[in-house]
Image 1: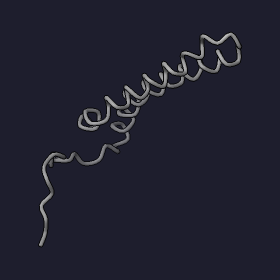
Image 2: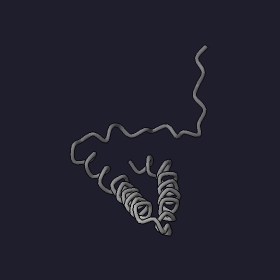
Image 3: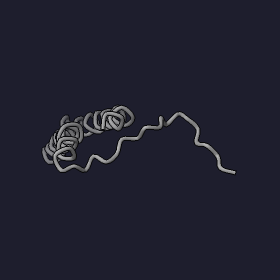
Length: 82
């Protein structure tokens, strides 16, 4: 689980931040339905990020679905079989 967060956690955080800020700019709209849509969408993305980083690992651990831990680093080349 720590390896998964190490490899993809930063990407998930940056993606959510960019999406949240992008939809958050809709809050500046004078048209209220658009402003509400932007605010609710940005809030939903923030909640999804919190669930991805906190709730999902806890649920996986509680249900025993973490799976085996990979022991081979990704940067090592695979051995070729002849």
